[in-house]
Image 1 (cartoon, helix red, strand yellow):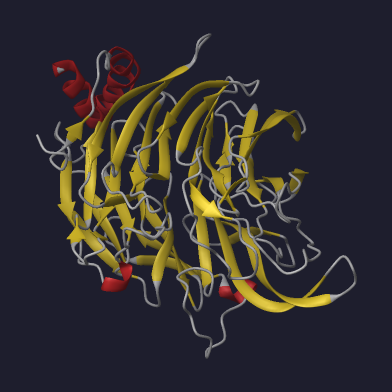
Image 2: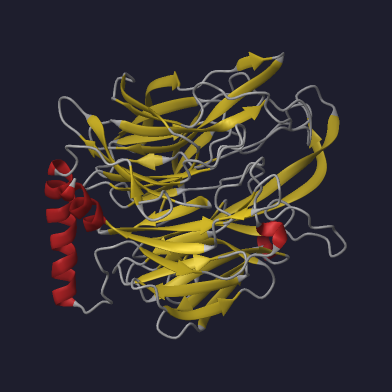
Length: 514
């Protein structure tokens, strides 16, 4: 079987823990769900669905870094639907058999964020555009139910402003997170204006005006916004919701700016916002290390029991907090999972990227591809080599000790998990520093807690193109991911624009046959 046909690199023994942890829990739950509500049939084999043709400017090249999240995919809570916000400025809805049910045009630009309502009756999309609009779409008919423009609050690009970047030069709905009682959204807009420095001087810098919102899921009524009257002057890119805590957790994020300006909402601040009132309950600031700022992007995670919170920074640090009654955050430890190094006189580093914290305080964490240290506004150099800790997954215990380590064969683009069973999917794309495409695909593994916590690798679905993002079904019964074609040095295109649907039981069936 070739590397593009389906599965490679399965080893023995693979399925005992998975069969017990996922096949029984996940698939029995899936079977019971079938009895309760008819859903489209998902066969036991991986399914490929051809998506629309991409414009040339949206096809990545082998030697360039592909931004995570350029296409977004989510799975409905009832496991019957898959939604994609793509490069074609449409939202596509599929059933789990790969049949497209409808598409919804995004009027001004492209979808940056997606979420289903908890009852699976609505799908929400947030766009990056002149207005930054959130659309609530009826799942059954594909019709708009309500809309809200964050541009009214965070500002809009000037009509004559050249919009060159898909995210930062626009008014953008950066994230959407749904709960039973509210839809949480992050709206942001980059603006250039005078900023105050600690020295008293004033210089022009890029400021990200940001608001965290809570809307009524069905009507779109604004329940609250944080801050209530003003905007944050730093980003809050990917907040997480904890039902156990009754809070949304967000982190203020900055990037390189001239002279380290004074911030009203300082970078590196992890904030717990009450979901009923929109009032901040507590915050903790992770101070900068070798950079002049702290950025926290994809790495916020709260354990299901609400007792632990993890946060990773772009300068390579991971912090574990204990969530105490109140609530308030108590730092347990801070550790470098990647450090600043020099190659040929150029400082290089790897970010602490995704993290997943479990109920016992164990953390599954990944690092990013290699980056060269930025030395000025807009000055981003190609790294001269690969950082030894780049594109690596670790399992750490609650004391910060490394229990397991895996060097991914390409750049880690995304991580999705089903916490109840411990099933983890790691999305691996091309290695842009090494210009290698050999190992792009979806890699599956399982976390096993206990006195001797460990990770068992289950197998991988290899792709011809590159994988960019994925989603795990709420019951762990299947994974869905997006493939993009990639342009090689000789302008040849490898791979295709596809939706992949991988049933969990395929992993069990496959490994049982090994």
